[in-house]
Structures are given as structure tokens and as C-alpha cells.
Length: 111
Image 1 (cartoon, rainbow, N blue to C red):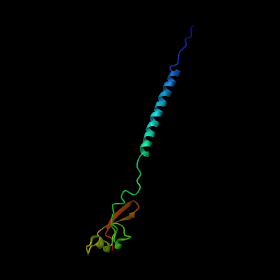
Image 2: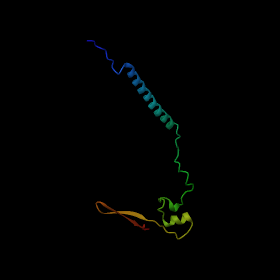
Image 3: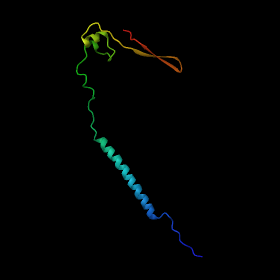
Image 4: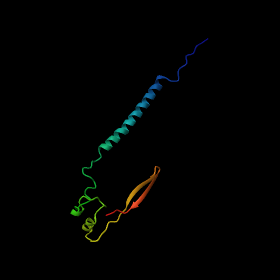
């Protein structure tokens, strides 16, 4: 009886091939991450707010301390230069008659 030596299908050269592929994959991933990091590092930073220069004039004294769109009649008159203006708007109020029901109601603001 003669015994033959059978070689394993996995040899050491296969192990080197897999290690080489894994190393190339790792280098490719690191290259992508590094290029993205350099791209973000070169982005310019904004000093002041981009919208800060859009309102070039100051509000009249009658409008100081009032929120935009919620101006009094006196403030509206000084902004437009016309007399007899009135505010028009609506306030949305939520009412909950039961636990799983929400009703939204529009109301006119009281002066």
C-alpha cells in the first residue's frame, strides 16, 4: 500500500494573497476618509451672520421691543407713514376636548 501526500487547497501563497487584498482595501478606505477630511478642512468659515446685513435701517422708537409681525397700530403708522392702519392676523389655538383629539381654532388677535 502506497500513501500519497495530498496537498491542502490552501497554501501559504493564498494567505499572502488575502492579506494583500485586505491591505489594499484598508489603504483605499483610509484614502477616502483622508480626502474627505482635507475637503472639510479647506471650507471657509463665516464670521458674522450671513443675514445680518439685510436690515439696513433702524426701527422707529414706537416699534422698539416688538416682535416682527406683531406690531401695534402706532408702530405700523410710523413704518408706513400712513394713518388709520389696523393689524390683521390670526392666532392658532389648540383645544383638546379628549385625549386623542386635537382641534385647531383660528382666532383674531385682540388689541
